[in-house]
Image (cartoon, rainbow, N blue to C red; front, top):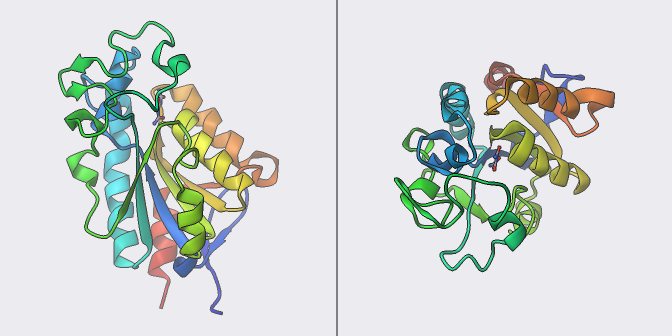
Amino acid sequence: MSDPLLVEAEPYAYGFDPRHTALLVIDMQRDFVEPGGFGETLGNDVTMLRRVIPPLRDTLAATRAAGITVIHTREGHKPDLSDCPPAKLNRGAPSLRIGDPGPKGRILIRGEYGHDIIDELAPVDGELVVDKPGKGSFYATGLDETLKQAGIRSLVVTGVTTEVCVHTTVREANDRGYECLVLSDCVGSYFEEFQRYGLQMIAAQGGIFGWVAPAAHYIKALETRS
Ligand code: TIU
């Protein structure tokens, strides 16, 4: 077996074998990063999340060029809402609820324009798109089985939002034995302090949930490959 590639990261270098690694792009949907979607109905300034798009585009390009598996996720629900628990549907006082008609289609509903991934980061042929009803990417998706069948052990994690779907996914993945590297400039939050503390919480305590590094460190590691 060849030596792992090493990424300069917190709390220490992250080693990974590209043949057993997947890049996970979480919920880069119009519903979260464009006006008129789910994120905005919750009262958020969606422009906060758009800063991840350029580094994530570079990361996707480098990952595809290296032949590493890319998997996208989308949070959303069936049109009849049968997979949306009332506790989620009725939570809080959003301006529009899940399933209500909005300017980009029904809020957070599969098949609607707003539910799909933004053009800048659109999946290419052969990339898996996992539809998930929850915040985590493992709950009710079969992702664990898919990754295990493909021999994936390491996950490079990107997307939105840092403290919600990214954190839930990293925690789920960590408990299932995956080693997660979270790319700090490729994950975004509506809240500056949640971004900062969310990242710190991953790498604290010797990497209690995983590792954290900027995208440039991961891309540099890919470029060192002979
Ligand atoms: N509200 C919020 O920050 N996030 C979500 O509802 N879903 C994801 O993080 N994708």
